[in-house]
Length: 401
Image (tube, rainbow, N blue to C red; front, side, top):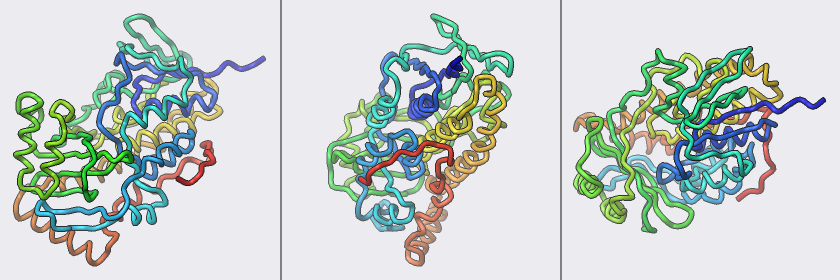
């Protein structure tokens, strides 16, 4: 007699949720993805896929099409607002050090690739989860929506930084806190740029090329949580004011973005780690478990790691064995993701320094380090990008792109 497939419900159809659904599906699970939005519109302009994220994608045969998006070649620099170089590097140096490129892809492209790995009927949009009961060794987890109540052997909470599921299963946890700065992002038509970031006094501006020639830019500024400057046009006007003294083509990049296409979000992080990333038959991944500042570009990559590690922990597990297996997932992920959150916070704090004296010291140290050790800008990434898929994960055979 055949053993029925274990069943999983994934809540949230972002990159982490879709990767987890695909990874579990490939391990023989029956998977349903519940997404509250009526249509699957990617939130955010672009996403940086680092070597660790590419290796995670390889295990679900999604790495090859994303590598085709690699476009950061030649010089890449960290600069002052006047254009003076603080620390040089290059796309080639990055690839030589970490064995893979840094890929900047439109989020829509990543979502398309991940959806291709799922059965057509796996995704249910326009479905808001109202309540979750985590279950235990003897009872399946329960998920209630406005239309029905579902049960499953596993619930994957990939429902983002404001995760209602996290609040339900860890009500004692304080949740995310404001990191002290806000961010804007946009994709604009092709323009001649040198990839990299510019650090000012409490201001950061970054610009990176996409494979199709367009440019993705992002900006950050220190200001109180929730502060706005009226409508979308007012926000763009404020951006042009804040960065008016930055080197070219910063102003042109901001001006090239239609005001309504500039995404503005305050930055929050999980400063207090969760005691575990699971409870009962519920497991948390991505921002629901370990939201971090964007300074390492690791939010999405850690969610991809989560997905692959979760599927590996559950590989071969029967429905009744899920509760016993999930502590292994927490052991793998809590310490690592907490360390990445802390490292991202430290770099973000330094990048957002505002005091004239502190910024002068920071810039001097960066210039000296860049001269003495040309790879100084890449060294902090070593432990972050060193992750490899667990030996039990299926690795695809891929051609080099």
